[in-house]
Image (cartoon, rainbow, N blue to C red; front, top):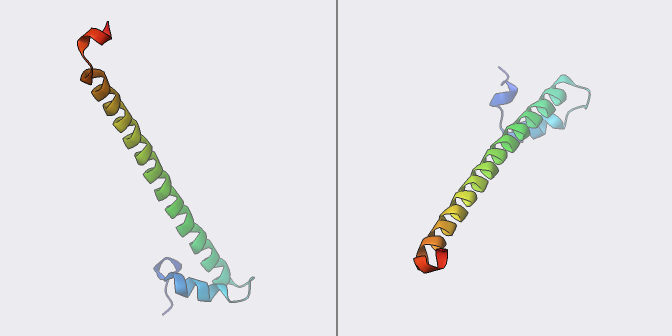
Amino acid sequence: MAKEPHQKTNAELAQDLSTRPDSLIHLTAKAEMARRAAVQDQWRSWIMFASVVIAALAAAASACSAYFAYPSSLHK
């Protein structure tokens, strides 16, 4: 019994890509690899967004710390 494309490893998909370019096996392997790349890109986008939010929070915390570290006579 053949595996579904989403159940195959990357090595198995690469082997399927070595078949004729117009074969169904080749096309399904190519589509599955494209789907996996899109999922990975989406994950990277979320990680990048989270890192930007964390950096903004750290910058705000640093600004607050600097503001309250100086004597209050400088805030007038």
